[in-house]
Length: 435
Image (cartoon, rainbow, N blue to C red):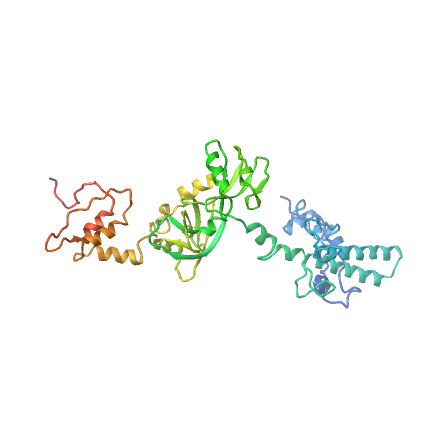
């Protein structure tokens, strides 16, 4: 609570400084000082003398982020996994990674500096070597700033150092951690298919051989999974990998005799996706939650994803070359969530405006209009063709025609009633008197 300064301020005005070349700090007015640039030791001495109270006033934390830690006294060396050797064909000796080259330079200059100090060399030689060491440390971390001379290999290629490996789209964070290549997602052009359900998505058969789901072997499904493994990796409805209970993975593409693979409970079979598997379908940009919805897969020929016309509204999709992504959930828990929370039928009413975002569009809407007009009449053949599209499990009985002579004709509304659900709710409207 006591905010009095522990040390009495000296009231002297601090010397103005600015950033010079190679990220070094120099004095603005060089006439007052002997040295142009501030040495790292001098800056470290200033930082170490800052009182704990001043450190807190500047917004730092004495135990977690002291300003003196900004000056490196020890340089950590990354392990070989970070900077692996590159073995090129025709080379007897493997070439080293860029970071290894940079570390070699740093060690050479550092050893040179120690030798100069031991030989009691001149201040000029020591300062030049120090600046060179500072340059190598800077370009070890950052080598793509225009203000710094690029560190290059012998043939003039700029070195790819630590900051470039981490930042940007191709860096470790975005390129390898946030997004990685796998066999559980796909991307292709979309095309319309009004004959599939709104909660289905047509998946090309070629993709179904790559997309897999890890099925755990139990006593109940062991026989079924054995038959899937016997199909191999090349047949639709087969499998790509078998993982035993010790974690050893067998690639069925390289297995000559599939009958030698015996399954036991606890093994994992990465089987191809099949009809009615739960998948997530997505169109970018993902602007609202309806941009990613759960669908049932339906394997189809050709090479595009097939989508019901009614689903175009929430995805904001059209069929002029749009591409969409498909993701296969990799556990039963994930599948259950997608089926019961993300599925298209659960997303029809949008919470945004509390109204449906999925409705009839295009041909279906025009068809409903034309079929329900008062002057639409259909012959027996036309009615039979339309009835062919009704669900097979529905035991539909053709109603008597509304016009018997000269030709039997059914009204469009009669046909419309055939595919509406049977609703047995009788009720009088509000305006009717009690009977």
